[in-house]
Length: 93
Image: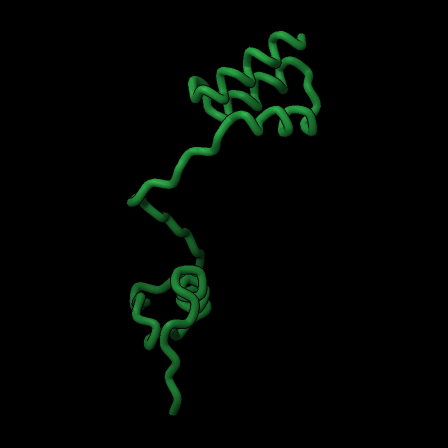
């Protein structure tokens, strides 16, 4: 089993298998989570890439809601505004 773990760690270190595959295969071998994560140190995390899509689902929105922070009038828009960009705009009366 030791040689199989070393082989998997080498594959992960070379980028030939993903971290997810590495952890899944070591779990299938019966390796504890603590040991698998220490061996996963050889498997480098993927570097971030630009772009992508963020999908957010919030229940209770209305058709009149806007992404404009000045028009946040319901809990859904407050929640989305806080998650998306914190509070970029403050309005005082």
